[in-house]
Image 1 (cartoon, rainbow, N blue to C red):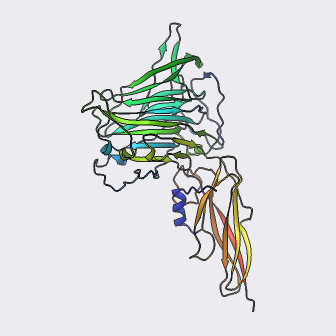
Image 2: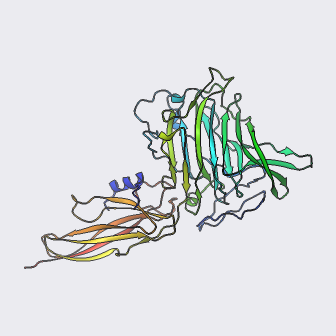
Image 3: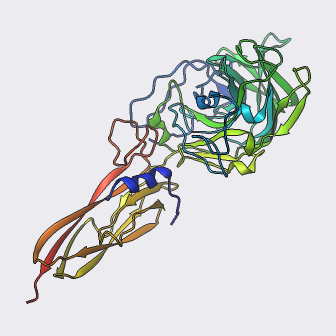
Length: 462
């Protein structure tokens, strides 16, 4: 049995006694225009037109932790809220746009910085109509526009570079061929590519990417793969990055591994059949480039430079601890639908003499699809000073048993006692259905309550 205890489940024990996403058809031609969403059994989210020939896509909407722009330089040895400490990923906010891993710098700890770079490994993975994998750098100045600069995968497994500054996107410029056609370049999957996001001059951002490229011809119906283009360094320059300065002061940087949902996003899409695995970041570095104010420098990204390290939602995103920096490995697996089974039933008729204890066993199991999990939390029945709350996670085919103790008092008779088995089977809480677990945030697992009832008959042997 897996023994992963979420912070949310742990808090619940203190407070209580008790649509599959299928891959899109693969084709060498990518239609421009609107991509339809696939049914998830719920109302589909609204979405914008996605012109993949230009590299437009659903945009992650995952900003920095704004608390970092409190009084800079005042952090003490105590860990502030949301801060990374000792390799522990503290609870951060769920985002409607998709699941994510975010490592965020603290300007008070890095000093002035005007670039961040690293090597990203892009696995051989394909987007669907409702899930787009992203690997990107980004951040925000104290006074200025948030920015993301990196790559995302599309349906054929190619990766498209993009800089997004608060909704304004820039892509690698199209190439005009001698044959009259226009061409675009994308990265091939299953390779490592080096990426650098830098500030060439105030109000501008540059993304430089070195890797092996694919060449596509633009047609009225989309783009058609021409072939391999070889290794090269290509760049995007965005001139509308208001607030970013080469001096590097008061600028937060972040390293992201995410998935993005269409339109404004939808928490319900966190439940589905999709996995973004195999990606990684290596040799992450921050510093100052030549030409910036002050002496140029570069240092590996280290835990002591971080303001926070988040993996949200925690049951979907698995990340190496921040002690592994300057390397990061994150995987994202959407929630598969589990199935709770109760082989023992949930109602127990027990009999015991007065002043005696009778015992039974509650058993429950996961009979869901592969890679699904049942999360549970309960406080078994029994003497208050001997009962310990339980919580855990069951993989497919696993079963858990817990003892139920019913204690007769000094009087004969029959009484009913009950507790609740709180369980989650891969559904996502979006506010439309109440969660049985106190303190649930939208995007968390949806917990339901299964009553466990003991009807105890106490007899007097006299």
